[in-house]
Image (tube, rainbow, N blue to C red; front, side, top):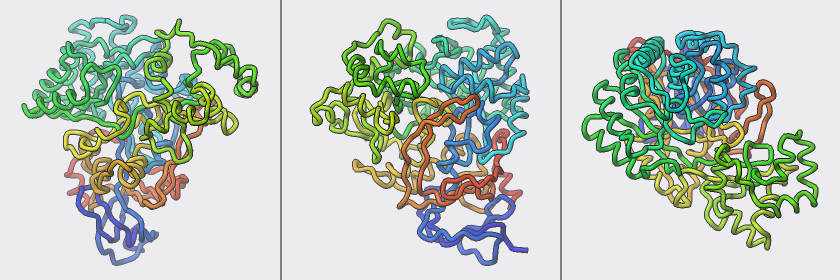
Length: 583
C-alpha cells in the first residue's frame, strides 16, 4: 500500500501562518496533512506543483448559503474560488427555527435582504426541520465540496417566539427575551458557530419592512450574548447603521467582556452609517483596549452592484418605458430594447421617483447612481476604476450623452453588457483606505455574501480578487502574499474557533489550493438561470486554480468539479486537542 493518499511535490508553500514561503512537498493521509517539507515515500496520487503556490483552502466567514446548502453539493460560486469552508446565517437571516406557518415569511425576509429568488428557495428547500438543532441535522445529511458552519439568525428566532407580533418596532417581553435566549443557547450547544443580527435600514424584507433586529434593544441583544456565554462558545455577528444614539460599541464591549466571546461587525464606508469608518475602527479599538474582543469585518473592494438588463437593477429601472416591458419574457424585452424608436423614447424620459421609497434598489440608484460613479465592465475590469474610466468621461470622449452610452453598453453582447456601481467603500474613488486595515490584527477579510444578491453582485469571487488585484496587479500598491493568505485562511478560521484548518502543518485538515499566480484572473460575470424553479443568479469563475482539495480529496481541477463531495457540517469550535489526537 502507498504510504500516503496524496503527495504535492515541489510547490511554493504559503502555509497560512504569515511566515515566508518556501519550496517543498506536502503529504496527505486520511484527510489530514501528514507531512510538510521534504517528503519521501509514495502515494496513491502525486501532483507536481512546481512553479505554483500551495496554500490552505480559503475560509469564508460571511455567506448566505442557508437555503442552497440544503440542496446543492457543488456550493458554487464560492467553491470555484478556492473556498473550502463557509460560514452562513449572517446578518440575522436564515431558516431555523421555523414554524410551518412562517416558511413563506422567512423566504420573503431572505429574498428582500439578500436578493435570493424566493421561488428558488420555496422549491429547493424540503423544510424537514422546525427547531435549529433539527436544521443542523438536515444540513448534515448532504455531503458537499465545502464544510458549512452557521449562525443562529435573529430574524428566525424573533419570528418563532413573537409569531404574529413580530413587526418593526415590536417590543418583546422579558419572557420573550428569555425564550429567544434559550433557543440561541440550544442552537449553539447543538453546534451553531454563533448568533447573527442586522440593524441597518438597507436590510428589508420583500415587502419593504426593516428586518427584526433593526429595532431590538441593547438589553435584548446582550441577553442573547449571555446565552452564548452559557453555552461556552460562539461569535456574535452584526450589520448595523451605527447610529450614535444606539451606542453599539458600548453594549458590544460590555457583552464581549462579560462573556469572553468575540463580537464582529461589518465595517464599511456606507451611506446608511452615521459613524464614519474611521470612527467605527477607533470606537472598536477603544473598547478592545478596555478588555473587549471586537473584530471588524472588511470587504476587499467597493461593495456595489453589477447592472444588466436582465439583472435586478439597471440605470433605466425608473423610466416609464421600462415599466411597460419589465415583466415581459427576455426575448420580447430584447426586441424592444433593440428598437431605435423605443430606445429614443426611453432615453428622453425622466425617471419616475413616485414609488422610490418603496423600492430600496431604486433609492440606491437615486442616491448613488450618477454617471460619474458608474463604470463599464470591460474584459480587463479591475474593480478599482478611476474617474477617467467612468461612463460620464467615456461618454464625453465618444461625443454621447451618459444615457445613450450606458444604453448601448448594456445592449452589447446581445444585451448582456454590464455596468458596475460601487455603493459602499468607494467614497474616495479608490481603495487606499483598506490597505492599512489589511495589516491589522483586529480586522478580518470578509463580506463576500456568497450565495446572495443573486441578481446584482458576485463578491463570492473575493478570494480571487484578493490574489489578482491586491497581491499581484494593483497599481496603487499591493499587499504581501503571505499576509493575504493568512488573512483569508488562518485569521478567518481562528475567529470562529476553527483551529483545525487554515494552516498547512501536520495534523490539520488537508484543505489545500494549488494556484498558478501567473494565470489567476477573474472571468466575465454572466447571468445563469440554474437555481430551482429557474431562479437567476450572477456567476463568475476564475482561471488559475490548478486544484482545490478538501479533506484530502481533489474537488476541483482547473475550475471544474470532479464530483467529489467530502465536505460536511461543522458543529461548534474545532479545538487544538483534535490535532493532538491526530498526531
